[in-house]
Length: 272
Image (cartoon, rainbow, N blue to C red; front, side, top):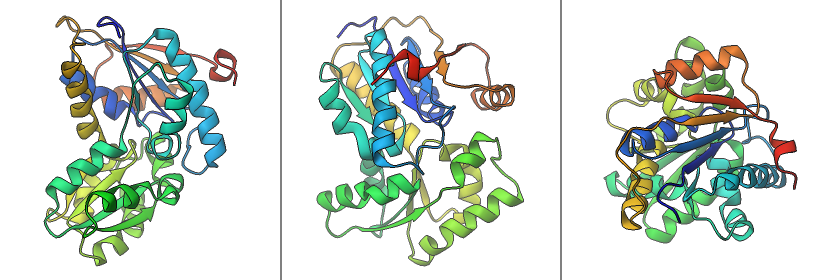
């Protein structure tokens, strides 16, 4: 692995920018290559086979940059495709968003009751309960599938009556279980963080995968002596589709225009 090689990050859409932004803040000297599959979002309602196929196409594209690390900033791919990608692209090291989130949730829960909200694919995979109970069998894990949240974020509906009503519908049963920790099991969900906290109250701790994953990435880079120069670098963001209104949403979230945006046809760029 080369110090000057970039960190590659990908997601089904703009949600993974929450991870990219945190990594950029912790490691400003690193070059970041991001890909968001906005033409085919959401992934969470698609079959495991389709999700893996998309992940292979994206990882194949990102390997062209010879990254020192590939971050799977998508819970659906993390739950269904990490091992698949590691076998297919054995030269590269992958970090997912599930394990860092679980580690943080286990560390902060007091009553061992953890809630998870995620896409249908992530929840159906059962990865969160499986991994958590392997670590501590006394943990109680309650899940809720939230298929409408990714479209809301992609459309820029971060708050408001409609968003609050949808969140209350999804989260109400988890609150009845007396959870004290809630894992935001999708990288889109941190954009809804303020609204979610308003609904669950201050007694419930939110686990944001972007924070936990960024710390994991920084640890890996330092441990393996892969730190780049401290001269601030700005990311290059690739998207499979990027209508003008999504650019505005992205700029509002990132709060800067110091990045390069490119559009590519991922299916032509890397054929399975």
